[in-house]
Image 1 (cartoon, rainbow, N blue to C red):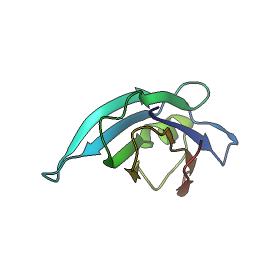
Image 2: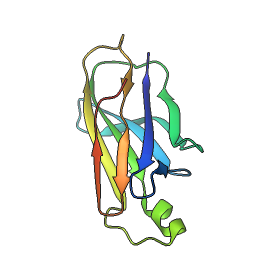
Image 3: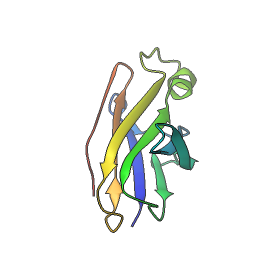
Length: 111
């Protein structure tokens, strides 16, 4: 069980490679603590970001997409995409994909 992600560039119809991704856990004091990180591979995946989930609560995946679009020579609107989600059971796997284009994004809970 753990947390994983991938990015699909929906404009290009291809995985987004070379994107820095960080996973953070929300602390009771209101701060965020980094618990995982990586860079997307040729399949657009960082798997896993976290192999063992330390506890229930709110987590955030932070995708640093500005340099990805810059490397493509593509103007974009969002330099960073953050997705906050709730972990209710540490015994489940959480896959949080990002569907990305230069001026929008969407996400869903994957499997």
